[in-house]
Image (cartoon, rainbow, N blue to C red; front, side, top):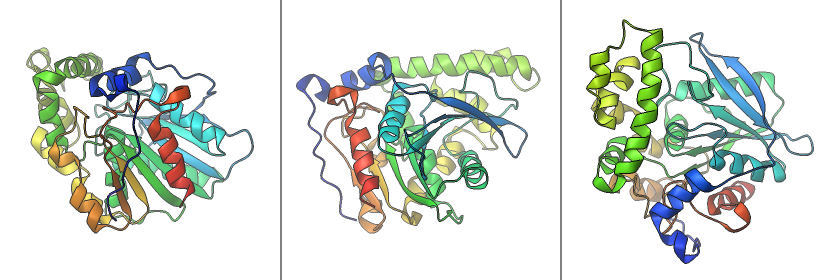
Amino acid sequence: MPLVASTYNPPILFKNGHLSTIYSGIFRKVDGVAQERERITLFDTDFLDLDWSFASQKSNKVMIILHGLEGSAQRPYIMGSAKVFNQNGYDACAINLRSCSGAPNLLFRSYHSGATEDLDAVIQHILTNKSYDEIYIKGFSLGGNLALKYLGEKREIPKAVKGAVAVSVPCDLYSSLKQLLLPKNRLYAARFKKHLVEKLRVKQELFPNEISDKDIASIKTLKDLDDIYTSRAHGFTDAIDYYTKSSCLPFLPNIKIPTLIINSKNDSFLGPECYPYTEAEENKNLFLETPNFGGHVGFYGVKNTTYTEKRCLNFLNEL
C-alpha cells in the first residue's frame, strides 16, 4: 500500500522525542481500568498471566495487547489502550510476557522479541475457551515486533484474527540495538540493563548451573546480555543470530491481514532499517505511518489519550 500520511502534530514540548518518550513511560498515569487476571499453562509447562478488562456490555471483539521490553500489563501505554478499547465496545486481553507479571516464570527461558509461540498459545486459548468472533492484536516495541513476526510466519492465521496495529517497532533488532548503544540513549540502555540483570540474578538462584557470577559480571551492554543469556536460553547461537532470526522485517511481505505500523521519525530507539518503506509499498495489507514526532511509545495526546490509541481504534473500525 502507499505510505500513510500522518496528521500527528503535538504541542511544541512534545515534539521533542526524548520528552515524549519519558513522559509516556514515567509520568503518564491511567486510571479507570479494572483488570481481572487469568493464568494459562503453556505447552512447555510454563505459564502466562493475562490481565483482562471488559467493555460495559458483552462484546464479541477482543483486543490482545503486547507490551515492550521489561514492560507489563500495568504500564500506562497498555492501560491507556485497554481503556480506549473498552470504552468503544472491545474487551482487552493484556498479555504479561514470561517473567513480566510480578512472578518469575518457571523455566530457564523467558520472553524474547521473536517468541511467537506464546502469542499463538494465547490466541488458541481464546479461540478454545472464549466466545469472541473477532480478534485484533496491538503490540508495542518488542511486542510489536513479536506480533508482526507472528502474522508473517508460515502458519495459518485463524480467520477470527481480523487486523493488527504495531507501535514503535524495532523491525530490525540489530539496527535498534546499535541505536540503544549510542550515547544519546545511554540512560535508557542503563535502565533496561539494570532491570534485566536483576531478573537474571533471580534466574541464577533458580538455575545455578546455568548462569555464573562471572557471566553476570561480564555484562556491560545489552548486547552482552543477549550473548550470555537471551541467545543461550532460547536456542540461538549468539546475539546476532537472535537478532537476525527474531526480527520481523523479513516476515512483513507475508502478512495477509490489514496491519498498521506507526514508527515516529524521531524515535531514538530505531535505526534506518526499522522503517519498512519498501515492504509497505509492496504489500497491500501493510500500512506504514511515520509521523515526524512521537518518540518511542510516546505520542502525547490531549485528555490523556495518545494519538496512537485514537489512530489504532480508527484504523480497526474502518476494516
